[in-house]
Image (cartoon, rainbow, N blue to C red; front, side):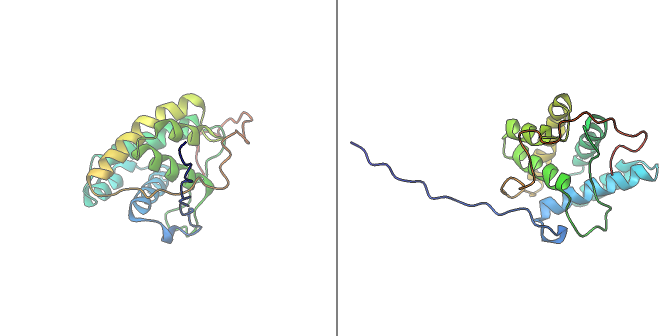
Length: 176
């Protein structure tokens, strides 16, 4: 007979409420998401700022991954997605969700990343399309030394589809 040994529970840290408490990789992605939206709202090309920022971080090609990810989010959202302004001190539930999906994708857990995106945020097709840019972003940031920390699933993330009602995004503003 063998012995059954319990695995010690390793508790992962939670996502902080304040953006200033994020890890460098998370801060870089959060800033990229927020500045992308700010540029779109001002009818400017978000790639100009993204290229400069990602080049300074050592991953210039990551700009295109962020741009593709956000375009997929904007086109396939099932509800209004909350992305704060660049100066916002807090962290919205959708920002936590995107950070978590990026962390999972970088760790090779693409099925879980897709689940996180599908859980009340993106359509099934949108979540599938978002995986490519997320995986590319994870690889490019990892090669530049930006590794997303492992965190617990955001508490307000409903993986069973709490907000599954149909939602038609207002045109032309798709993100908040």
